[in-house]
Image (cartoon, rainbow, N blue to C red; front, side, top):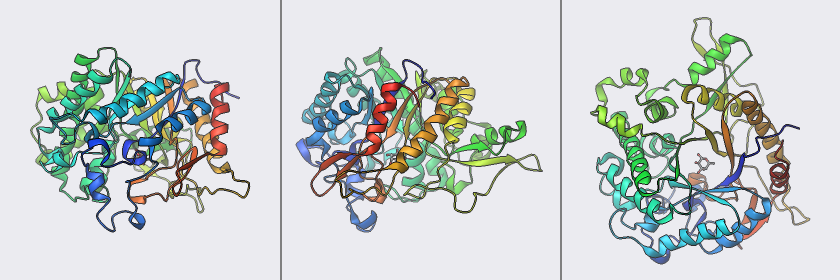
Length: 450
Ligand code: FCB
């Protein structure tokens, strides 16, 4: 058994549209996922998030479940269009009230709120004005951040700006398989990325002004290369692979383009060289804005791939073995990513790290005994958390872990087909059934060891 640090934060995570439902409830505006999910054939079996887990109406029950599991913290996101139906301007007080009640209820139950400002739900009205291609979005996002910090900053002490910019730009605007389903040019997506990063910086400034006590973070993601052996050259190969930028049709999927500007104050040389002819204007003021000091570095880590040093002195990936283990989504199961990922990230950026998401979807069913047995999830968690503990023991400053997800929910274009929850949701009735893993997670938290 291995202990975690005494003040380690054990949590669980969700995002607004994946669980809330009530898409038109109490004056909410539409966001791009509300619209996209009603375009036929975009989402598996034409599912949509209109009801989802009905968390908007059942949040108290969900908080009770979290309390029973014993989590210290809950990471959730605000639906921008619920509080600002047009993205800017008129505030929807009822939308703010929902999040206010949620936060109060969390605090009453001694669960620390970790709030994410943007988990992919761009207000439709802003999308219609050009969205991330419109440079004004930097101020739109700043104003939204200020509203949230002003309203909740006395009660919420941890705010993340963006969740996984790699995904919402890459899948949404380059590959066209997430909302809004566009296939833009690389030049356009690079320009969007610069606006996302500037919007991040502006939000940091506006949160600091409104709520100086809040800890501010950024929550990107990536696949994590890990070395084939403990040999120095393989470790070096994995480290190099971790910070490389993939080919153009998949360029967003990397660590350095998104994190170097925020944490080191400059874009990676490799990217500047590669994209030289298509870069937007990047001024030193922009870089200053983007690299506003932040307090914590979130990282969503699900899997990785094995890398070794090739004979030509370049990293090369090692083919996966036949029959390698996968989750129900088909994602590889690679616990090593939770050791090497945070280690490499901490070496490069020296920021306290929170694993803002990690988890597994399984083919969970309600058994004849009425319970949901999910040994695959428990096994996955044991393997991954063992690696995470080892990374901490070897010196990476990792402060917390948020299991994705509290409950089964709307998994974007996969609809409801992927069950990631510690809690099973029967979508026909809305009933919640804590899975075996919820009890297991309770014990891990109580003992603070794996
Ligand atoms: C991450 C997303 C999260 C969820 C998990 C499975 O990429 O941030 O919303 O879909 O994957």
